[in-house]
Length: 337
Image (cartoon, rainbow, N blue to C red; front, side, top):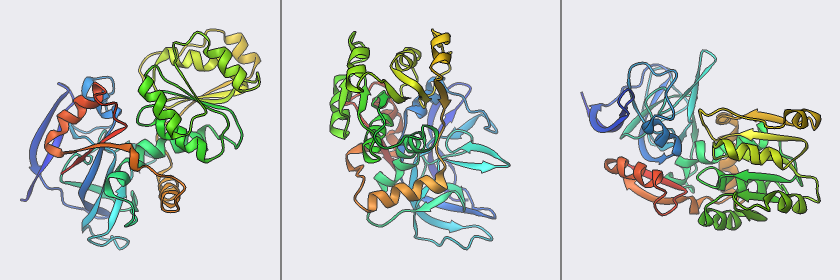
């Protein structure tokens, strides 16, 4: 049986190992994809450090990687929509019996030479979009897109805030600008991240430790506060700060993942102002991916600056370490088998 290289996480010990494993064979309704690029996400770091744990994984080891692009290598029985050689982006998850399974978390992902996908969990990647950019769209771009357009339901000219301008937050700023939110306020303790936010289209970039933050946001919104605030940091103090500058009927959208409790300090005020907290996870891939690819093709969006580095698959551990330590303040690192 043909072998391939894969970066596998042994979940009980949180050990990441590069292993030779059997190359998967596509079953009925499945497609085998030769991986060309796979993004490295903070969620991968959290899986390795134990902050996140797979809920639906069968067994104790999984190939990481939920941001994947490549070319069709083989198709299983009954697959007619795909043929070898086609460029594709794999969805970051699949619906199975009404439950969402996340690629690279609940089943094997794309930190490997080949990856399996259900035939209906892929989207064609236009020739004009490089594999590295295509790979990051299923999470780093489509997750904020879903948070903004679906969960947060942001409308043009609404005042919005983005807390945490990392791999997802910087794209949120860019997307909010594209759909006409105004003003777009970015909040991050890192000065490099704040500069990045301004370059991506933020109207204001504030330090979360700034004692004048509330007054500055109020002034920028004509005293009204933010219609929507997005937490991409997954840090409890961020959420309290965001609630403190929400407008009446404003919504706080939780995108960053954390196992820490959510606290609303002044519950009476929160209820009186009819504010809301909304949880967000992923995106509606069959809708979001084609939309975003069309916007990139049409020149409305450009994520060429989002790939901060490309490393060989053999250096997966190095990529994780660089992201964890924020070495070079990367937006997205990409692995190439």
